[in-house]
Image (cartoon, rainbow, N blue to C red; front, side, top):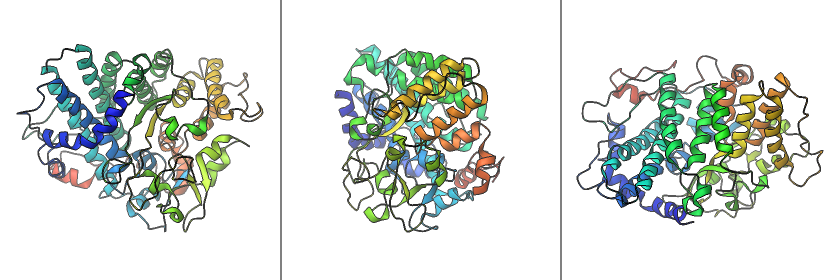
Length: 488
C-alpha cells in the first residue's frame, strides 16, 4: 500500500509544509486573517504539490483527535453528545466544561470547541485554496496526477465546509487565498454554502479515480467513492432525495462491498476495508500524529477520560441478540454517567486492538472511519422508500444481513417485503441509529428529519436555536460586525 504508507509517513512532516505555506498560522487565525501565503520558493514542482496536498489533509487529524482536549473527534461532539443516544460522561458532571455546555444545550459564544472547529476548518480550507490556486501553474509529466491532486483538494475543501455548515449554518465562502484587506467576508446563506460544497464535489467526482481500480497504491486518499459518498450525504442533508439516488447508483457501480464481519470494522484489520469509503489516518505517536480518541472515550479505571457514555434509549433500540450492540457498547463502572461506553474507538481490553495505554492523550494509530458503505446503503434506502419500497428494503436488508453475520436468520431478521410508507421509513431510521451509533450522525439525522424537538427537548434542546451552534465570539468581534451571530 505505497500511497497509504506515504500518507502515514507524510503526517510526520506535514507541519513543515504548513510552515512554508503560511506566515504565523496560529497568529493569523487568532487575529483577522485566514492565513497569508508565502509562495516565493514553493509550488514549483510536482513533489511540492504533493506535499502541499498532504498538508491539506493535516487539518482532518486536528478536527478528529490530535489538536485539542476539548474535541475528541468532531463527529462525537457535534453529532452525539446531548442527544438521546449519548451524554458527555467524564469523571463528574462539571468535568470538561465545554462538553458540559453541549451536553446541557447551554452553549456559550466563547466555547473553545466551537472556536477550534471554526479555526481549524478554515485552516484546512486555506491549504486547499493554496493547492487549487497554485498547482495549475506547475508542470507535470503525469497530467492525470495533476488533475487528481486538484480534485483531492476540492474534496477536502468541501469536507471542511460541510463540517462548518452542519455546525453553524451559512458561513463565509473563501474560495482563494485572501490578500490584505480582504479578511472580513460576510456569511453566505446555508443554501449558497451547500451549493459551493456540491460544486467542489462535482469536480472531485469527475476527476478522481476509484481506489478499487487503482489497486492498493491509492489507499489512504480521497477517491471517487469518497466523493460520491460525501455528495450523497450533502444531498441527504438538503432533502434532495433524487440526487441521493443518482449519486448512490454511481457509487454502487464502483464495486465496493460490505465487509462480512461488523465487529472488525473499527479494528486495525478493518482500516480501508471493502466497505470503507473514506478514513482519516493516524500514527501511533504520542507527541503529534496519533489519535487521542481512545484515551478520551475509555473508562477512568483504564487511564481514560470516561467521556461519551450511552443512554439507555440507545441500548434499548437494539433488537434481541443484535451482534452490533456488543460491537458498539460495553459496560464498565464509572464515577459519573451511565457506565456504558463506546467500544468502536476504545482501548483494550474493550476492543481487540491493543492500543497502548500510556498516560499520554495522543497515542492511537487507529484510523477514524468517516464514510462507510452501510451509511450509503441506508441513505439510498431513505431516498427511495416512497417511490421504490422493494428496492429500499433490499438495501436495508444488505445491512441487516451483514449485522447478523453467521447467526440464525431469526437474529436481526430481514425486513418484510410488504413494508411501505411510514413503517418502512421508521425501520430505516432504526437501522441508521443502531448501525451508525457513536459515529456522529444522530443529531444531524434528528434535525434533518424534524424529530429533534420531540426527542431532544427533555435534554434542553430548543427548536429554532440549537440546530446550529454560535459563531465564535472572537471571530464576530474580529470581523468588526461583518459576521452575523446565530440566535445566541
